[in-house]
Image (cartoon, rainbow, N blue to C red; front, side):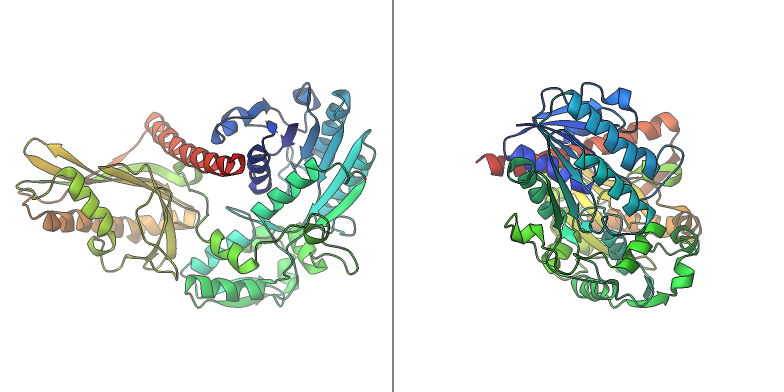
Length: 503
């Protein structure tokens, strides 16, 4: 089939597009940056760059399509463009009109668990989207997934980052026992693909959630076990919570919930008593256990690029030219990857969480312990015989990358560390300017010195370093390079998933 997917770039949409391709379907991706975003898939995705809130931009997008999977929606408003009325309601109306104009037979609307009974502005907007969907001139199905969690989601991933932070406590709303039923993003993808394919689900409203009910308190305990941390929670009274999640974040805490989501949390985001869970009872999908999903989530956080940070983008280089090196550049580099934890200073520890592999394989996630910063992560990218790039992941105090390389320089072998980064946020910017920069300089100079020792050679000038502030053009070039590395990783991973389905 040819299937139009809106919003195929978030956690839900990305998974759904990949799953549809895995099953051999052709996808039309409708999003504001579709021309660039389709590059993460090897083939089979047609870009239609559009804003669902602008009906003119949608014209022709559904031509020749057999079905529409409408995922686009916002959970937090940012007026004037991103409002519930314009995106969740108007975007649904516009997409239905385009689907009807093109003669699309099926329309699958992704709503939200509890939208049919919730009182939040978000739920009311999704409920209105459901009402519009029921008027579609063709077969329609409404899917109400529970809290979908996956790489970079805005709730459970936020709690994970707080657990890994240096703080011994994390905030919770009220008593922290409000129930909700999270759904692993890959299970959500399989569910939506099944609904699109099945012709017996027209006119159905399907609640789709994981089978395990959890809470903030339960998730904190699980993350403590998974990460090897011992973080406690501190309750934020309901009266304080209603002052606004953004206001609370001003004191340094990100509660991971918008005001609307706090209201949904209080209402209980679970399948209503007496209702069926379509995941298991209709679609017959064996769900990913909550523990397995959370463990996978720990290594799937998204990269944090310089464009995500604040302040000036800096380039630092630390190097030594080694005479009489016992090893070729290739062998010396391999020794670096094998002894990474040994050549870093004692206050930087790798493999700090239970189950960490700690290897330098392409796409591997390395977890590090930094003083005063807790656990942070980097992803191995662009691994070659003599170089590798480590990209910082969400939760790291820096937004950028570190590249290690070896090369022949005349009779000498050079070992070099290149750092490209901005502070992740304003708080980290202050920390970097007061202590972090000196600690970073010490760390990479130490690595260079240890690699000279490991080489068995001698560096007459010792470890050298230089720091530069990059101008806008240079910063753009670095950001483009790192974005391409990320796109290559996504494309490679999606290619492997799709090939597994085709085989």
